[in-house]
Image (tube, rainbow, N blue to C red; front, side, top):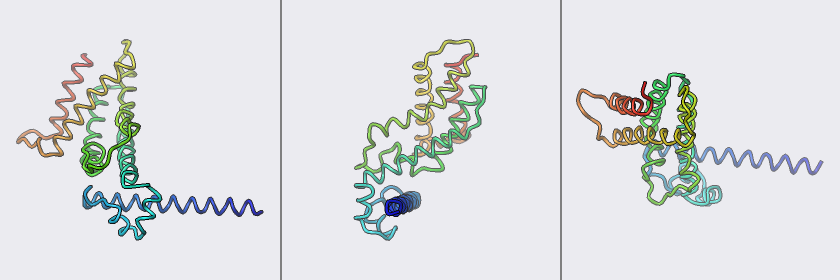
Length: 207
């Protein structure tokens, strides 16, 4: 009986800790969205949450650890956005749809995108493992490339290389748009992205 009470207490304690951790991340995320990356400080977050900075340091070790959680959340959101794109055997249309979904995510979540890619928090450096998350999002595209090229023997390494080139193009276009460089009359940023993707698709997958 005593063992069960201890086990139940620990389970309840862990559940409370997880709930508190999630609440802190939710509040930090809201602060990030409302005021930008520069507003993220342990003191500011502690005041917002209503706890001491000691609690934050106990849970996340330091600001790097807390921002790490937001960084990971951003990539998780991006992954879900890409997974939400309906799969199509038409590789061209699927590549376009993934590219537009990537752009939509970036525009809708600019603060997360800035943490993921723009190093807006100078003291934050993602771990080597976290840096690889960007490429893990490419698995959807890699699998599509391998599945949709009928009658051709395409190695996985080649599929990854093609996917990286497509990602670099989409990321470059979107990043330039976010920083205000793509503001040309008569041509929308989405049209420019579509043209870039068309050029790549025609190069890699000629009909």
